[in-house]
Image (cartoon, rainbow, N blue to C red; front, side, top):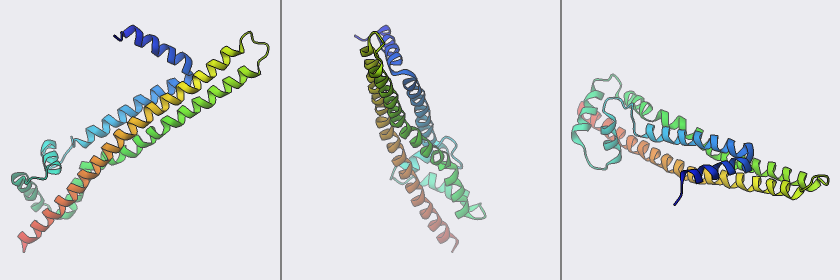
Length: 198
């Protein structure tokens, strides 16, 4: 059974052997987690206009007809001077936050393996320095520390980068599906409004 003290001991060992690059990767992991949570929250449409967030999610996720919800949306568009422009504004309010945050999250995620590679280079410097030292009592210790730092940071960068990239790609595809469904709804609403006015 894994104990809390065992986890703390292992974490301290990783910090000691991974060096400052490992700490930078841990800080980056928290930044990525915050970015992904904010994208997920924004994709739940908390600041949805006209309809409630739950109604928008039902309307855009489900492929079933929701006549009452559509009627409420259509009646709010009828009162607008330019329904097409109002729908564009609604789309901006629904999706702008997620569209701003997705590229930032991808940048953070792509930085993780690169920072891990920086740790590899730092560890190799330490290794070569240990090889060149002849005065030191045990250059093998310095060499093993350098190799350990190189491997830990590389592995940590990949462990952070690969799963979070998959999660972010899933959130992006979900966001694109919402936009596609909104565009479909937009064209249907505009067609029904134009047919009702003629």
